[in-house]
Image 1: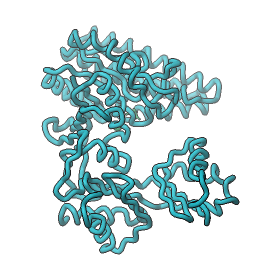
Image 2: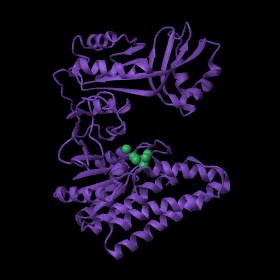
Image 3: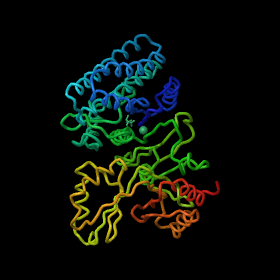
Image 4: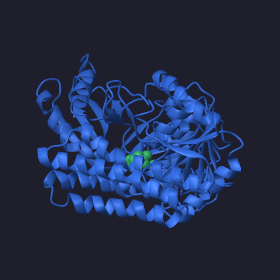
Length: 458
Ligand code: ASP
Ligand code: MG
């Protein structure tokens, strides 16, 4: 059994859907379960719709009608069978009405809870699963749309960025999906969200459908997960920065997680999480070249001869520097900072400490909020808080990097040769990555320098 996840970029044009149908026909010798994202751009439009509704109810009918025609045009274009077309139109209409009711609720109360926002956003996947299943049926492939919160993709009680309850989900999905699979019907499951054990819809966060696919794969003990995209898989560097970057054939779970956290927007960083301890392989594939351009992600690593597989950067970070002569001695200080920040929903990417300074890496969107949250701690052990903006975090990733002599020296020689100052450096924290921080304006040159050192001249 394999799980195939189709991202929004694979669900744009009639040709995309024909390509999906032909891939399925070629690969149907083993049972397939599909997980879908919303169609490209739809989740963003739903975010905007929620925002519009918060301001006033006036534009709700217009906004819903845009979303309606966008989805209806797709089925009118592709579905030939009149009966299927009518049925699908009705099913979609049910979702548009639900969406409209939710938006009017927001306008009426003038407020939006996380739970309501998730319900609004989740309509994107509900619509796309209905559409993909209908198109497949029209193409002669048996398929059925299923909503992940109805079939028991169960999560913890967190509403946004939830974590799947793998044990409960395994039980539920096995019961729900086995009868379909026995009848050779392909389930087309909504990605992105599940449901808490109190029955509330909860989301895995933006781009969370990759994680959903992994949860489904774990639950059904699939052999593999195929993440379909409209671009090639992981590269040795962002091709916009390094023109002759090359595709990476294989990565370990750990390497893929590091690359996803830091820059590469190929896979949701949490995708490998549900797969830990399994032997399930992830294939990242390009819809436009299904036989080639595959990155395979597997549990065990393999060392490339020159160790480094990729160099990537994250520009959306700030460094929060917490100064105090005694921070290295005061027990519990990091715990207190961590609790304060998590109380304000701020995620810490990474921590680097010395005796006199604690450096926290945060998302730049959290910078203002984090200073506000920590202000009340200043005055005691903490002397002052400083925010460093306009920096980039560069990650150099490769299995075996900690045990290969002279590697860090080569990385830093490459950067130093271009006259770039490294502001902070961490090695040893991850078994497969070094991190360092440079001024944002030096980021591209630093990546090019490291890439040239390990992959040859550009
Ligand atoms: N549609 C959701 C988003 O854009 C989830 C996904 O695409 O993975 O965030
Ligand atoms: Mg995505």
